[in-house]
Length: 233
Image (tube, rainbow, N blue to C red):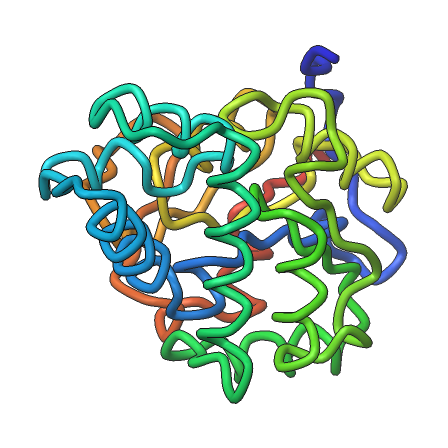
């Protein structure tokens, strides 16, 4: 799957060029990026290995296959990729069983998008089983669809997840605003041709042409997102 060439942007029937908002999950809407790292540290400690703090920036925001494979190779742990993936997902689900902590501003933004009937999708590198558990807290009715990392041939940092979300919503990627918290997710959305708002959670995201960086979701609302998509007429 490859990115499409942006088409001229015209206004929608409501007078705005923004067609859809696509949001990452871990570290963007829910404060769970730290959970994943803590679980990885605990699991590898049980296997007799200590994870280096510098590895956190390598695994954050990536698909399970990439992150888990990196940690196995770096430590030499006696566990298969499949075994580790199942174990990490099970530990994560148990960790969020009672409540999923929302990122500051997330609840307000989701409510605002729903109130104005803005097509919204959840696009995550996490597996479907994890997404469905988190959606119980976020409210599945707030999203027209969700895309999981184990449902696409190539997940983030490839453009496939965001291209799939845009196509399913009937939107052009250049008219979609994406909110991401990691360099991996930003790379995916930008490769798809979307307009990206970066809200860094773990690690730095450097400035780049066409990229907007904000402190938190408290700085993001619908007028702000609409201002990022400039109509041609």
